[in-house]
Amino acid sequence: MHYKVNIQPDAKTDIIESSNRYDEQHFGLGEEFIQRVDKALIQILLQPLGYQKIFMNFRKLLIKQFPYCIYYLVDYQEKKIDIIAVIHPSRNPDIWKKRTDKK
Image (cartoon, rainbow, N blue to C red):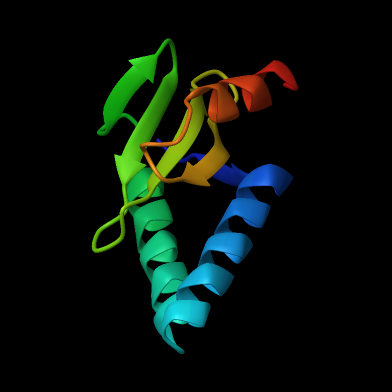
């Protein structure tokens, strides 16, 4: 079963801002964060239903070595995965939920 991954603009902003914050802490850490996000996206692509279901067709995956989760929506009929947010799990869950209202 092949799925297409679509990273929503807000999620792209999450990744860039988080990467920049990590680089401010230690140069090169931001690039490592992006590499871990890329690996996590590949995991999601290979096993879209293999991660924690949090609400209806929404799931999340914790990024290895960084305290961030990728929140995503699986559209079974369209064979599509929408990356909604890449945020720290302690942040208000309304962040990713409000983004789903735009869909």
